[in-house]
Image (tube, rainbow, N blue to C red):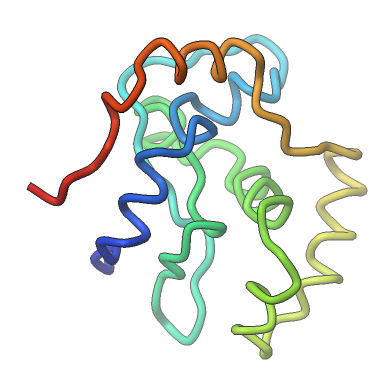
Length: 132
């Protein structure tokens, strides 16, 4: 596993989207989320994990260890990506991959749940990552 750069680590730690498992956020059937949130990197490019912020999704320990629905993790990461993000990795047909995953999972949008926003305001700067 590649080390996540400090600036990306800070960005992920302060993003409320990264505080709950994607299976809980998107409510994929009965949710069996359990354990702490872990950062999952669903893409491999040129033999290495992509450790950019857009290519990292939150999974609970249960879903991360069981590797359930890794295609769904890829889809959520693609929803977070911008065209500029994807342009950094030109040898992958991202548009085809996203269309294929849309046919499987349907149309989703990345929206921060209201409770996550409230939780973030409640915590204030509690999740500021200082690099310590």
